[in-house]
Length: 436
Ligand code: NAD
Image (cartoon, rainbow, N blue to C red; front, side, top):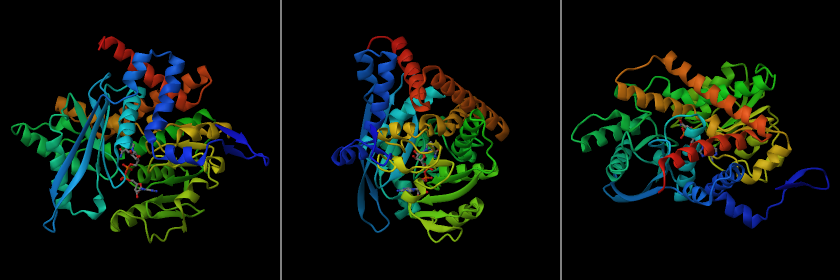
């Protein structure tokens, strides 16, 4: 909810206590959007009950031998939200802040994401509470193998297929496929996980897929708004897989990326950040931008409210809040991260006339190419990079058109339209499965 104050500024009508409670709970943001779509679609109480909860939660405490000879126990999760449309699908997050409610939200978003882009998967997500940048390669390998052993009955090419997320990459996926195959009498089972290195059955185009998809939907939106990309400016929060690759593609399309950031803070350069230089710097400095000389220092909070045309939050959940939403100046937001906007900020952005391309559509490029990787593994036949990119571009453009058309027809935001499509497809499948 929002209202205008005496100065005509839009401000939230939410208490500080309520905000504190909400900010800690991305699952609440997910649920409020799910229930809004359910109201419009007329879901039965039973259907709501089923889809508002995860179908399975697995927790493991993983003892890992550390390099100094001690043993540390790590808390690890895998949540399956729904298998109505196919096997569970979703990444694994390694981060200090990982917690159960977050993984539950991320799993549900995977259900809606796969449904909105029409690929035959349900939704799942995994997470381990750890600090990967402070661990050695050996410690990370032992942790990943322990997780795979603990989840060996949960994972499976027809049950639940993990992939990389924050803090994990092709390297961890390689350890998972190796450990899982050993646990299955040495049968090589590459389709159990996607985002693998090419040598182990990965797909061409997977590493770049999410950032490429974010850029594709931005260009689609601009086309619908009759705007050309050349000369527009953008700010990108988060400079990992999604943020850096989105920034690279945006600048290749003539959009000036004037600000970037990561966990250590941000950088602003009105002439445009040289993205290839920033990527080189990050790769040479343990994955961080700290000390980068290509722009003036700014904070992550400042980045979000810069006077740019396009804002791409590509780091964490709950970055756009009812407090900072009134100060956002971008007129187009593409959610590279999952859940970067709190539900309570949605109406504020809408009142300001800001177009938001929602996470479940904007960042779906990764899971689309993950699906192709799984198909290639199962067929034993591999596509060229151009084939992968053409298919992925087509799929995400089609999904964008579906969402845009639905939004116009029902006079709702792109986010509401995406949820309507996703919940509708999922609930139809649920009905076809029959009584539970
Ligand atoms: P990553 O680990 O490669 O990068 C994360 C980036 O965010 C890093 O630059 C990190 O420093 C930065 N960051 C962390 N905490 C921050 C903070 N408090 N403020 C600002 N920056 C911060 O992760 P990724 O794969 O790029 O994922 C980023 C987001 O995109 C996540 O929400 C993830 O779920 C989502 N996502 C990823 C993919 C994928 O294919 N990798 C697909 C869909 C969605």
